[in-house]
Length: 319
Image (cartoon, rainbow, N blue to C red):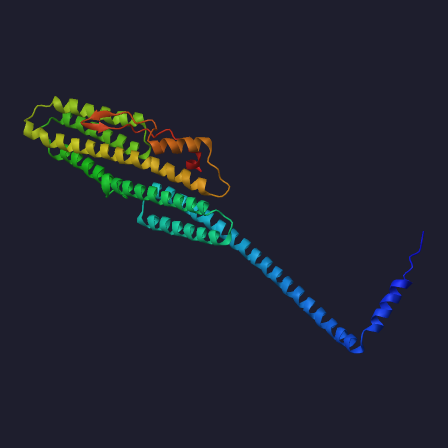
């Protein structure tokens, strides 16, 4: 292996240095620390910028995680509030729903600020979904006000009052009717009240049919009782009012049911990592188009709809 002769390059470097004046050498030596200091300063500034960026990235990650968690909690809160409202309507639950929606919107604000590369359309879509939830809940609240928040309000109160009225009429104002016939009328009306209460607790077609059968039986018994038309008209009108009120209750309940289903499905689909199942997508489209199986119409002085719930395959309702 040949050795490299470095003597010549070194000799040339030595001659070059000796040709430089002493002053120039002093200046060069003085500048070396300055250049080193500048290099160190640039390295420090660059490193500090990188560290600050890393801290900001970590801070944004924490803010994004917190906002995502808060968004999920808020949407879950809206969904639970609707379930509570369905079970026991109350004005305070309306306020809780609005608070949860406000928290969800604020969480979206934080997410939008933390993720610069997130499409604005995604945020708009989520805000639009929140708006749909609010609109459906407002419609549900309106229907529930029609139904009544308690047994002394709305159609619920009307059913209670109409039922009491016909019971009092049978007990107090049918002195001209034979006792046996009065007892038959009372039993028929009590059976109607029982089926009405059972239907409101758990809507079912068989219960509705039993209610209608009781109404037909009442009309048959009352038609066979002798009496002047003006004497019979009062009770007939009271019973008709009772049946008409129940008809309106069924109609309002039918309008409220799909709203609850839509809110439940939409709120679940908004949660991170949740994708709508095929059955949920099918159900949602059917509810939107109002193409779910209709309740069979019959007539009991006024048109009564079927009491069986629509066949919605929404497993989330049970969860």
